[in-house]
Image 1 (cartoon, one colour):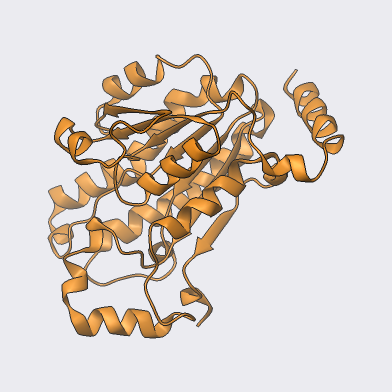
Image 2 (image 1 turned 120 degrees about the horizontal axis):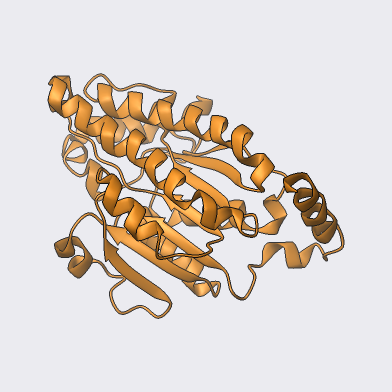
Amino acid sequence: MAGQRSAMTFSGRRNMSLKSTLTLPSDFRAVVVGGAGGIGQPICELFAELGASVAATAVSEKELRQSRLAGVDGISLTALDVADDAAVDAFAGGFERIDLLVNCAGILRRDAEFDRDVFRKVIDINLIGTYGTCHAFHDALAVRGGSIINIASMNAYSALPRLPAYCASKAGVVMLTKSLALAWAKDGIRVNAIAPGFIETAINAEGRKDVEHYRRIAARTAFNRWGQPEEIAGAAAFLAMPAAGYITGTVLAVDGGFLAS
């Protein structure tokens, strides 16, 4: 049955105009976990502008109130702790069908990650939490062949000495993405990841106070600057569109050329 569905989907896309593969269906539904802040906010905003219905989450009601997404048409907000399996399952259970799951939730604890408990917490949220939401939304994604976009990191490939758990967790997200892409292709689900480079968000605000560090990072990029959250959103939109229908198990680096140097 899954093989038949995949063949039909391919045939349908083959008969579409090339231009139409760069649009979303009118009833497109997206869930962006961790979408109320950081990189997730512009992703939610772009999909809403493209006509999608977007459900975004944050870890607390306080973060939801502080989000600029509050009151935006087409976007709903929910508090969700991705480390709480029961809460994740209950949240996912409210969706009969979705077309896209974006996993943006993540933390880092500069220097403190050498503590075992902190290390475990970072892994629990960044890696296990990502798997947990993928698992919870599997059936809703399989209804008409949706896709998953996991937010990994350039630090899955280029390590930092003060963030051992963060780097390890994001390397895990890369291999989780590839493994699920192979496992769930039979269900019509594509699984890809984006590996942002150094993007100016609240998660790295403390590190950016080190001016020498900030300038050293910028100098290694091709554009001699850090990236902005809005510069990740376009990559997410492309990976969700029919134009990317033959892309799965891929990790797209959006790093300003950092890894090329």
